[in-house]
Amino acid sequence: MTIPPEAKRLLEDEPLIAHLGTCLEGRPHVAPVWYRCEDDTVKIVTTGRKLANIRENPRVALSIQDDEAGATKWMVTLLGTATVIDDEAETAATRRRINEKYDAGPEAYAENTLVRIDVGSATSRTY
Image (cartoon, rainbow, N blue to C red):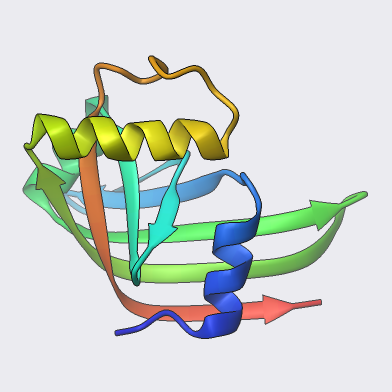
């Protein structure tokens, strides 16, 4: 599935927080993550419960929204399949690109693991 051009533009332009939804044993878990949208995939670096849940159940959801003065400007929801990438060089390169997007130092999240999310469906709406 390719991400529609308008949704891709919204996802790539601003350093917004995505809310990653995972589910294990029927219990949802939603947590904020930094992300990078590239080539119809979304990449994050993460650890802890999010990573453990992905290893057990790779089906995930991402919700990204931009607001101004409490009013929603746009929102994008993605459903996809996550893959844990155990490659140190690829992880370091992706982490560097994510940290640049969010204006963070090069060592931010140095201990986190790379996850690639292949998008299965995408919806977006502007207001």
